[in-house]
Image (tube, rainbow, N blue to C red; front, side, top):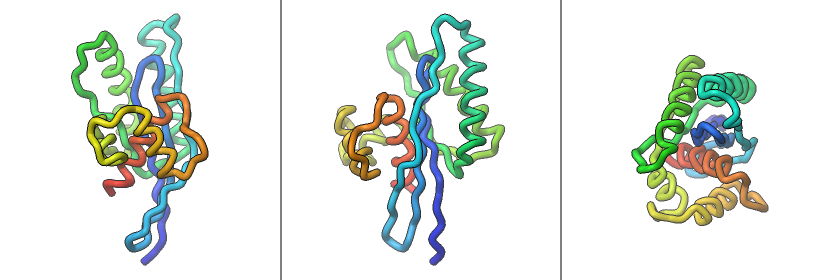
Length: 163
C-alpha cells in the first residue's frame, strides 16, 4: 500500500474571527497519524463595513488556500442559535463556501456535536475537553490558542477520523 499524505484544512467560520487549522495525515493499513502543520486566525475589524470585512475574509482565505493547497476542507456546519451573531457568521461562512468552491477543493461539514463526539466520544463535551483532545491527537505540548484556531483544528481532525 502506498503511503500518501493527505492535507486537511479545518475552518471555523466567523465574521470577527475566522479560525483555521491545517494538518497532514498518512494512512497505512490500520495506522493513521495526523501531523500539525499550521493554525491561526483571520481577523476583521468592526470599524470596517460589512462588505469590507467579507472582502477581507475572501482575500485572506483565498491566499491561505493557495499557499497551503489542502486536498480537503472541513468546515463547521451552521445550525441555528438564538444569538445576534448567527447572521454575520452565516455571511462569513458563505464567503468560505464560495472560495472553497471556486478553488474546487472537496469539502466536508460537521456540526459541533459531531466534532465533540469524534474527538472525545461524547457529543456534549465542553470546549476544554475538545481542546485537550486536539492537543493529544496532534501530540502538541500545549493547547492551541486562540479558541477559533483550536476549533478549526478540531474540524480538520474530525475529517481525518471520518475518512
